[in-house]
Image (cartoon, rainbow, N blue to C red; front, side, top):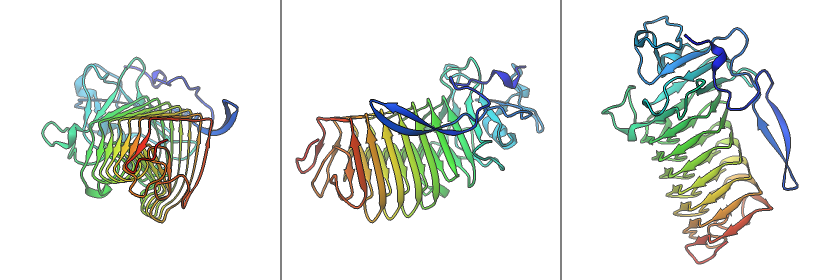
Amino acid sequence: MGSGRDVATAGRARGRSRAAIVMSLAGVSLAVLVSGASARQAGIPTLYAYARGGASPGSSCPRTAALSQRCTLAEALSRVAAGGTVALATPGSRGWYVGNWAVATPGTSVSAPLTIAPAAGVSNATLDGNDGRQTGCRTVTCAGPVLTIGSGVYLDLDGLSIQNARDSGGASKGNGGGVYNGGDALEVRGSSFSSDAANGDGGAIDNAEAGNGTLSVVGSSFSGDSANGDGGAIDSADNGGSGSLSVLGSTFSGDSANRDGGAIANADNGGKGSASVASSTFSGNSAADHGGAVENADSGGQGSLTVSDSTFSGNRAEDLDGGAGGTPDNGEGAITGTGTLSVTDSTFSGNSGGDGAAG
């Protein structure tokens, strides 16, 4: 049996409080929200989750070789306390966590979030949506978001792979294939999202959909994610929602949206949102309407978008209203529009729009 001390930290120090740190990137100062909240608060045990388990009620969810004592992810999530950690103890080479899970831990806060991370020594811990199929699903359904974050929850996802989600509806209304953030704050670090799909908005992550929410993404990758609505990879502050999004040091490739924002959509459809993107790469993303890579403040939305030290290449938008095509699209398919846009120290090449405008 292992102790809670061996949870993977993904290179971040423990015992610090969450704080805003100013970083200098190619001469540009950027405020980045980083998490220093300890994944193992004093006196709060780490609970270990396995891809398959058979623990009896009341189990302490230990790290163990005994199947009869192993907790599933659903069991660990139902028992973890605010400020605690659910450590994934099954490496991707030995099996995936297949299903959909709800995260509803009460009492979480900025200083005491819930953390889901691989256990020490575990590589490629993978949450798999089973392509929405019921056969082979290990939870009640696989037809929704892989993770649904409940109201008021503060959650950190650290070093995970989330793949093959197919959100076709239900309580999420088809929004958020990989993660539906209905909570207060979600922080994603060192994680990958691939082949996740939503029938609505946000193929990989949906944030502040008709509600409030904060999303921070650091050092993560999004590839081949898709949305039938807005935001092939990430959708934030849509449909009257109010939210903030920050993306740092991340990559978006081959993501697509059937409406706006091949990779990211912000403050669409009457939403109010702020978004910042820094030191990130967008390549080969596409949107059927506006913003092959990033779309900001469309359809009555009020949004602000800041882009710095980033690269955009080979993105495409059909861009029915003309304008900047596959470059960051602000408002109705052009750089200027209903939202505000600031772009510094970034490069654009081989981007295109359906009406011939390229960036």
